[in-house]
Length: 353
Image 1: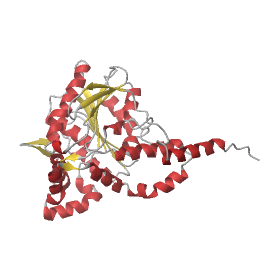
Image 2: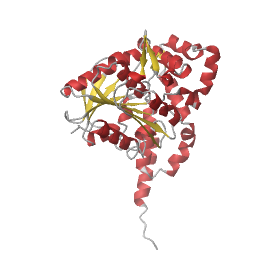
Image 3: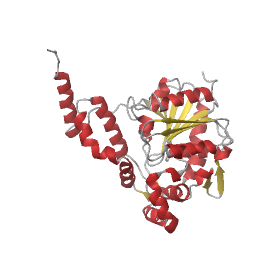
Image 4: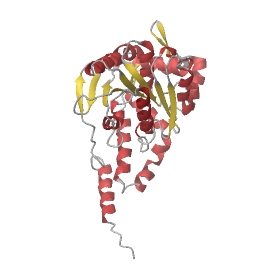
């Protein structure tokens, strides 16, 4: 008869059950050590690691998502991975959006917030160019920033799960169909009145895109109640979704009119105020990664970027398994998405030391 010690499993099961119901969770959050470098409205800049090293990387979050997307927990942290790979990762944190920010649009990020962070990071590294990495709309902001500002010290841009062709996103097809008849007002009228898209609406919308996950969560917990690591990953995603902030009204209006209804990005263009930014003006190497299970940015939507960056010296497109967030911080991200980033950064900048 096998001598099986069931006590460790029972202890883990009991501890996890208590943590999920009455306690503070199954595992305490352990963020990667970081230091705040500068402070400003919607532009706090942080550096991961104890000191300035080599190979600066600026992580650009999307709006309506916490900046912690790059550092959820050990094993789910692109920031920690970059640090372990010999790079110096920085993060710009936009903080919380309120109705007072209703007038902020893409211009604020493309012409001000991200360029300021880039220049500061470059100065800290004696003028060295910086690798930009953006997830979701953070990738959109990064691409537009590089295309609109040729003088910025950018070495390369990586866009993870960044949709380009919005006609390839089945989840928003009903909105596009209605919009062809009614225009953008049904989407934007309430947000102009409120000053933006409220955080609870953003959180609920994200959960809808992962409806199967939400519906099967009780069974998932029951099957994995003994597995602390698996439950900790689930818990980190739940906390992330619960912390999602909202969109400023102008920013959301631009998403609706230009990206969702106009699909202008698929034509390689985006209007910023009185001028039009052409993606073909981008002149640095670009990596785009699409998730095979991503319903927010399907592979076909992400892959469209390869036809538009005619001015870039190289455009690399890769796929990886995972949902929208899983692509960035899922259990297989280290072997797929992060590995693609490692290879790309080494190829795009072989002079790095």
